[in-house]
Length: 269
Ligand SMILES: CC(C)(COP(=O)(O)OP(=O)(O)OC[C@H]1O[C@@H](n2cnc3c(N)ncnc32)[C@H](O)[C@@H]1OP(=O)(O)O)[C@@H](O)C(=O)NCCC(=O)NCCS
Image (cartoon, rainbow, N blue to C red):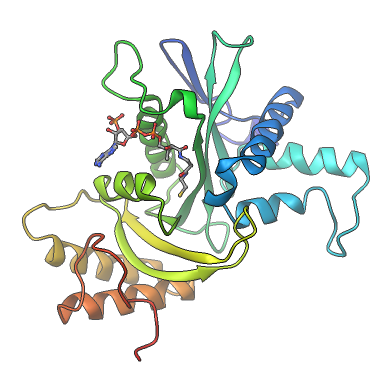
């Protein structure tokens, strides 16, 4: 399957790092599963929810029974093979353990396979590589990953990116605000990797434009209206949330960027 996907061979070499799409080879599958297992067993479990749940379906069937080993391997190979429905950008440290996977960023189509909306999820950089500049470049390790994901998402024909961020994840929220994401609302999530129920903020970025600093609310309203128009009824949940957000912005009940908890996605009291 990988040979049919035009971006399969995509890679960037940057200093001692390689950024490339995972290709479903055994070594990629092993490295990816190992990293995700370590995230889930540690402090990272709290940041991710349904990506873990969907990955669990590679191991167990709908009745929660373990799958046959051959089927497990085939499902994981498919999961780690780049395609429009789901791509995983891996960051590798070429000087560590002969090429260690130290970061992942997933691009997942939302709704139908030709959807214009991508979710950016499962974003992770190993703690030892955070806030780390790449020698000779202006970007950090995470920063080049974000830029690459942005470019690949556009090349794949997506027009909007959605992210879900757990309440309290200030680092991710601040970075996404800086990238121009608009917060659409908040909802409760009950399958976080640490077993807890907690709210997630849904943020949306129109990949076709850059934010206008002077009139962020006007900019946000016009972008959200265009977004709503172009996405039609692809993902009704997102459409409803955007309509709530536009109404709140128009009535001055909220502001375009993150200003703390508000009621945009909750039914009016
Ligand atoms: C989220 C995560 C990948 C970010 O990695 P990081 O190393 O902490 O991020 P960096 O500080 O290098 O920042 C990444 C980019 O955002 C930019 N950035 C950081 N803070 C910013 C801010 N306040 N405003 C604007 N841009 C900001 C950085 O400048 C950098 O871009 P650059 O390369 O163009 O300079 C990492 O912290 C992580 O793995 N966290 C745990 C998992 C997680 O929270 N995942 C997201 C779940 S929603």
